[in-house]
Amino acid sequence: MKEAVELHKGQFIEELKQYLSIPSISSLSKHKEDVKEAADWTASALKKAGMENVEVIPTEGHPIVYADWLHAKGKPTVLVYGHYDVQPEDPIDLWETPPFEPVIRDGKIFARGATDDKGQLFIHIKAVDLLMKEKGELPVNVKFVIEGEEEIASPNLGPFIQDNEEKLACDAVVISDTSFSEKGQPAICTSLRGALAMELTVTTANSDLHSGTYGGGVPNSIHALVQLLDSLHEENGRIAVEGFYKGVPEPTEALRKEVAEVPFNEERTKQELELDELFGEEGFTFHERVGIRPTLEINGITGGFQGEGLKTIVPKEASAKISCRLVGGQDPQKVFEAIQRHVADNRPVGAKVDLHQYIKADPVAIDSKNPYIQKAADAFESVYDVRPLFPKEGGSIPIVEVFGRVLDAPVVLMGFGLPTENLHAPNEHFHLENFTKGIETVCKYLQEL
Figure 1: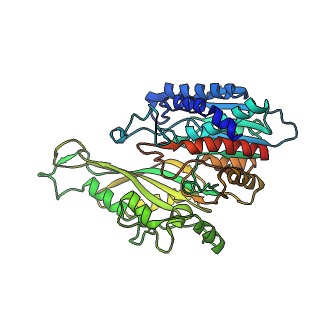
Figure 2: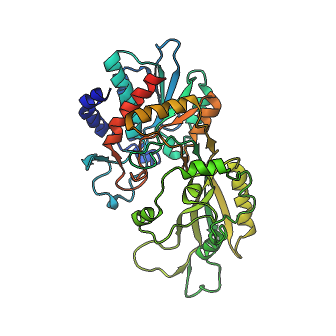
Figure 3: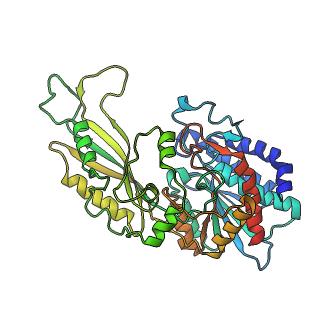
């Protein structure tokens, strides 16, 4: 299969460039038609690959693309999930080349969505395409369900899965939206943290006030917000919200050992990030902090005058965007309620506070010994000549929990990205070596199944 990949890789890369040129930003309404174009492009690519029953299914938001090939009688059925939507390109001035004009430099393709997730999703489309070209059939039954709302927490895919349990029935769900541990070291993620996102708004007076006339005599919304935000953490990195850690399991020695097997160079990490020191909850390593421990992060702050120059006011309103990553048995709703109580109990004098919830998702843990995961490890090893590690991913893919629970099938997170590929950031890219080897690996996986 390696020779077949080499023969067709030029064509596959040109097709990937077309895919990446579509600005399918799901969070911005002005790109609604671009997102629809990406859905149609995905459906067309699946048809060209030999998939059948291809549908672009409308939702209350962006479309879901479905396709299948179900002629391998008595063989397993694999459901491939991915997403064709991408993050906004901001800040645009930090991109070396335009984010939706894909370019290849140093063996990498640069564009928004290159690694998250169009490049990784396209691996699967091209793998079935290649198998159909070479064999005229697939070794197992394959279904695709591809959404355009992953970057906005998949509001319509969960209900779709629940309403179409029989249509989506499978023996395993395969997702490529994670990364290797480092270059040359494949990884199959075996846990994802849950998610909770919210916005805290603080208001004081009924309008902005002149800081000469009122400053020092009335509450300042930004001062109040900063005071509240500072109350959320202790100095040692532990989260100070009462009840926040309910459901967080004490890590076992076996778990800590599995986490420690993932390579990590602290000095190199600090150098790459231009940091003097790393920071986090005391008593835990970096990989434990970002993989198996919960977090509460302040993602952005807004308030007062934001324009050029000065405007000497006492601002009436300030807000902060906050996200949590959750683990174990933490209940996102109960964590939100605990933060609500904390905010109410610590409300500064003269401030009115409001906490609005945006996203919540449960944590996921997957048994690395599952046969479908071990077969994926075999496929990686046959192509990369090294056995994958089984890391605990700090991020969240909310729909993973829904797939596993509703379809009662193991979820195989066989990602092909690298941690250094700037996903969600300027100059996002994808290593073409992993694109081509990824196609070979997925072909091998389906054949081994």
